[in-house]
Image (cartoon, rainbow, N blue to C red):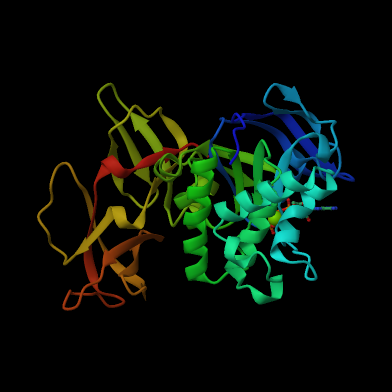
Length: 361
Ligand SMILES: Nc1ncnc2c1ncn2[C@@H]1O[C@H](COP(=O)(O)OP(=O)(O)OP(=O)(O)O)[C@@H](O)[C@H]1O
Ligand SMILES: [Mg+2]
């Protein structure tokens, strides 16, 4: 419905404080035209504040905010032509679906015929034309959600900003709606930023994402690149479960080796620098568990340990294996009839060093 050319969004050294409490610090970020981008981070990390700042709500930030070629940092929201769906979208209860969506256009005093045409088109996009005469109380949560979306896209924004738009929906509807939003975004080609604290939601919906913690941008990249190569302990832990072993990296001419405090030695495949303090990161499903006394293989790291703890998660058992006082988490896929281990069982644990990443902090 829109022939808007997609625009990019660039943040340069953006900072923001409430009083003397710095909420966002020195943020540099490039979001590509037409990209579906996610802000991911724990509660209070600054996601909504960053999104609102792009829309122009809240206190003035320091630094620059570019939408396309224009620095909008000092412009009011209505001069930016962005559409925002707030964390708690509120529809007008006394207005029909049609009026809720048309409202933004009527406010702009557009001719009635254009208002009708564009509102119909927006309702068509979200699949709600048949329900145009209902009131919000006569809609399901997912349908209300779509009204909130239609109300935003009807003004043909250059950038679509969505703040946890699915947080009020049940698990099944969330999955359904996130697919719909993704498809809609592809069709319209609008540069979109989606805020969530749910890793699965960000993974499934975003081309790329930025992980925030405590107002600081931790890392930017595709969901897979961040999961596989987290920049630090925070990102490693936030994107799924991670084993984080403390130790050091030693190297001679031929080979770098990670030596964990618990005595485990991992030959590193990549060109790691020597370091007196380093962290080895690998995921629980990278580790395998078996009966003790397995034949060792030169290309695989192995050690013998004891089960300290286990959890049954339905599709897998998650074991904690004691390695000289540190726990190593191991995920073992569960199937009917498959052997499982009890607490205090001796086991053999193996890890392919290809999966290991070295974090410097
Ligand atoms: N108007 C305000 N005045 C003072 N502090 C504020 C204000 N708005 C937000 N904050 C603080 O800024 C920080 C970031 O808040 P923000 O709403 O951006 O977090 P968030 O990442 O969106 O969290 P959530 O996932 O809970 O929505 C928090 O510490 C919050 O308490
Ligand atoms: Mg928020």
